[in-house]
Length: 603
Ligand code: ATP
Ligand code: MG
Image 1 (cartoon, protein in one colour):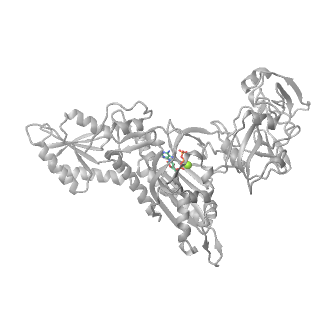
Image 2: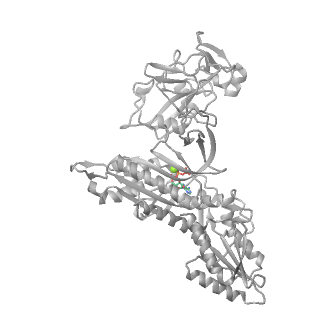
Image 3: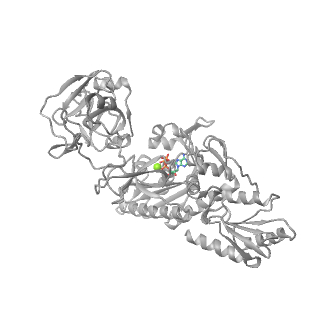
């Protein structure tokens, strides 16, 4: 066996799992985001895959295997050929045909299933695979946590009705909890749905991590848990500087010359008011919106392409102390993306440069307003901030005494702010706290989007043609392996949970008067016969070197046979450091029962 332990981690390894995967000889780097698994690493990866496979089979999912390289054709059918962006690797073969290196497989599976599906009697169909994916990530980092090539368990379900989808979705939610528990991980399931509590349309399985890419918004009172990309909050009412709710003003708008006062901080100084008294207005470029803008200011000039506007510009107003969440804005506008407009378009649509855009007198763009400013109600507006300061709508001027509702009315209002710690839970009114997390898995109700686009159909009980509704469900295998290390290590190395350890036990003979190697080989053979995964460290190294390596590799049990231990063997637990002397004859029994009982605890 190739044992490739290192004393030092490579310089680019910033997190513990990345360092330990290199040092323990689990992986090597071929290029940025491209890793080779060495035998020790592959054994762990296969263990995780097997746990996932067992839990998938247990909920009646069936294993498929799709090719990694798929025809561009199916991606053109779904429309994602153009919308996936540069993350998707496209190639042309010698015949000039377009091919895609799969970043995910909704298209491929739907194109397979549509040829097999005829009748409602076949439904539901639940397919999964454990297969290579490629995403040309902009910033691959933290080793296999975010690679370019990685292994994903991806699953797809097809249903005759929503009830069936709900059932299978719930099965996946349960299976995912089992998978992570069996891997020795503590996950936080969060809603990845915009909107209501328990949002049942999409859930992400997060693991708490200092280097997490996601901010989790959590409520300790009612258990609300959401990704901050999607988290909602109760709208609050801005207070004046004495802590009282603000009052409407009867004063007319007044223009104030304020050249050079552009940022919120500069405004706070200049006007001697808190940022919560300002309304900032930003111009956004929005892609593929399904909202009907025809009656909005400027809306008539937008070009519609079928049901969507490929590109529209909107003005977004929000309280000065808050930030716009682009994902929530895009969701509100039923759009695929929203990003800040460039300066040229800011001036074109608002008449003022960035920093002086205001909500009053906008005739060229629809105005979208966050709930922090006002909410549309059945009979008008609920105003949440009064007597405000805003951009003046021309360079170098601001407006004071601006009253929402009186001085401007929005085309649309919504909750589009970035929720932070301290904001108010929409369910129970408790202030939120936050944690950083990494996404290990994701379950998602897709609806009929892909089935419709790829023309998958079936005949229902009445012989009527219907489109199946779908769900999709992913787990990152490599990211799971790395996360297990993040949660299970000490200064000496990895501490594998028994369920995923590359070997359960290492037998280490130490040279001396007695033939410890022969005794070790005998024990090794005995354990193998019992089905225990055992490593025999018969390297010609000093004991200290062997012990260090085995600790680094995280093998749960170590059995030492030497002149000092005989007629006993010394058994040591990696996790606790506990040492027991066991008569050599009984060691196999002891090891087998320890391994089996620890395995059992992860069932
Ligand atoms: P992220 O937000 O981290 O980029 P994602 O939301 O794009 O992930 P999904 O499309 O939901 O990921 O994929 C399912 C799972 O695949 C993720 O939960 C994650 O565990 C894994 N995964 C995604 N991208 C990578 C990557 N670049 N490297 C390793 N694992 C990944
Ligand atoms: Mg995801």
